[in-house]
Length: 355
Image (cartoon, rainbow, N blue to C red; front, side, top):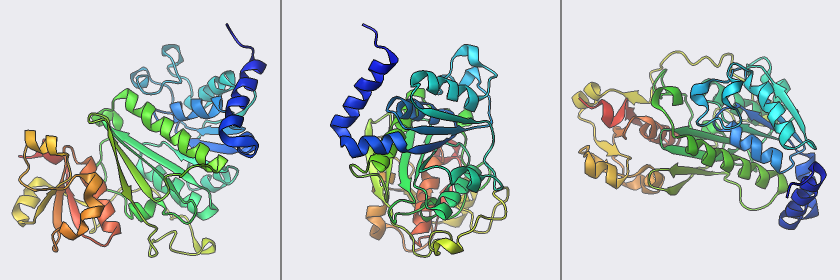
């Protein structure tokens, strides 16, 4: 039996009413949500937010649909190749729910337009695939006081966190400095399992609903890590850094950087190479899982990433290096430890690059 648009809306509203109450339902209907990136994360997040009746959804992306990305960008089809992601996604969302307003923005977020665009929304979801955009979006949300739901995926691993919400941390509290250029491979370079994008994108939508409807416990101050191969989640608690270069300042003193083109390394780079590590004689911490180390031992002390911040007392006193399978988790670990005042460097390329 097929339902008319009005019947679908009535049924959806009844479900929301039962789950969230009248007040929560009205919050969803009046909410304005911006999705940065209409790709693997933005696609499932947008579809669920539209289906649930978020009043206004903005989706910004300046890229075009590519057939090679369809395994994770489920809002598009083969015949859509070459079309604007943002504009086409807005059409798809309007078809999914004719009772909402969808704003497709075929632009790239830049320093000159980010504040003007974001200030119109209540919550921002960041599904971008580069650090320049992540820091730009975070800084703008922090300046404007807009909650940010941030997620990322690579290969079989994903992470999601709520930022700039109820005195919680911002992205710079977790990762004070961007990684060195090309240090973290993109999904196109390293690959990603398509269904993982669905898991993390759906979680972004759920966190957004919790923030808007004021229910449950959003992931503020909690970085949730998901390992698809193991099928388990780990949670890392992160606090707002009172010395953060951005949110450590009063709102009226927060400013965007002059540039978000992170093209150069600094003396504070979070990475090193295998040859430099082997010459240094520094201790080694392995943040992989036990089964990974069992099949390919690193010779380092095994402390899985999900347990790292709970075992700070077990870490070497002097500077040390961190390794994982491909360099992604170890870079996250190095950034998290840097936010705790602990100096450590990730080994570029991980075990795959070991000579």
